[in-house]
Image 1: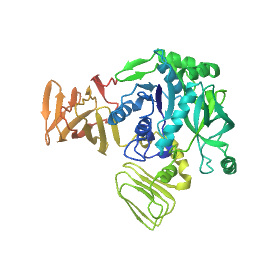
Image 2: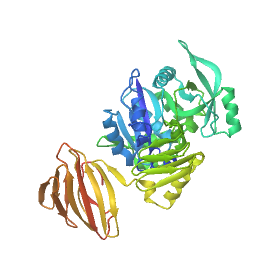
Image 3: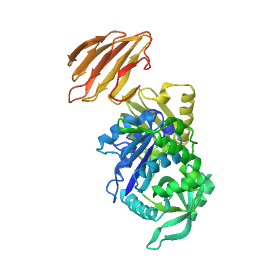
Image 4: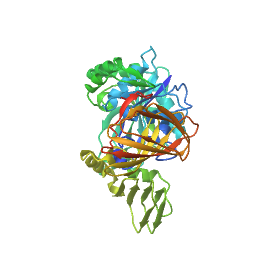
Length: 476
């Protein structure tokens, strides 16, 4: 049995302003119409003995993750919510504890949710080889065969020994000699020419029992904290919430440092499948389809005498004249302009915005909720205008506000509105008024999305001015 474990806790700050803390890169459709998360899950379909995936994600992303799985008709084994980020070793430990809880011992396929793999046949063949080695007790990682002297990745040095077991020989698998930190350019060139080094993919396969034994051997404190957090976990709708107190005591560590660099069971399966971790805008440019001048365009883009640029429009026309080697990314509330060779430094901008508590770091103008989404259209000191979309059959919480009143105008679909003791139905071009301090609820009883315009007015318009009395989604 092969249990995919999809790790979806990253922030993707190098892809700001498209990737935000509340909507990071793994949830974005960067290379095709599906998100990176969806593509990660779909590329494992069809492999022998694969069961429904286990997703480990941030609590803030739970409803988006669940919705994206629903969109590709994928039932998860579970969606486990981390109260806070603690890197990959605790996430792997939690996944292994989940896998053995009923006496099973599957092979875990640890897959970051934000990678790109182009050659699915080569990937599937490598997974089959790695799964066979994992069944024999190996801790297997994929070593990406490098095609350039890359300084942005860590490397693996493979041994020269072909792996053999009592029953089989694995000609495309090698012992794992050591992990190597990101090199300088000259060292990277030496690695490329030696053919003994591969990029560290961050993907692993091992039996649940094997990784638990190695965690116990090399980092028992992490395993103990994870056991306590898993024992204290609770079901919340379709999610599993880990015990926050125990998990917060767990130290943050990658599975590479915690186990893989220390174990004697490490193995490498080389992989040449068009892999990329999409770690920067430069990487996305390389993955794109350039025009005859080397420009990769997305959205409404017009160019004149431009070369080798990445030009990304989300909402508005982006026009460029006579520029070269730039990254220009437009969203509804931010514009990024960077030298393509400096694209890794976009993370510094994101960190500065975080320090200043700027909303452009945390989320987009369009905010996703379990019932749908809302988007701010206009805002001033005492009023705010939002466009609200409610999914068919979805219902907002029964709530009230201390500091604002609201006007709702339906522009598409049908709304069922509770306002105080009244319940009314609204159709297109009809409206209603929600007085300050009045309990109210909005529901879409129809089969098409409900769209309405909400005009808020009052002394304070923050999202924390919500008092919930009932909520189908378990929010406080």
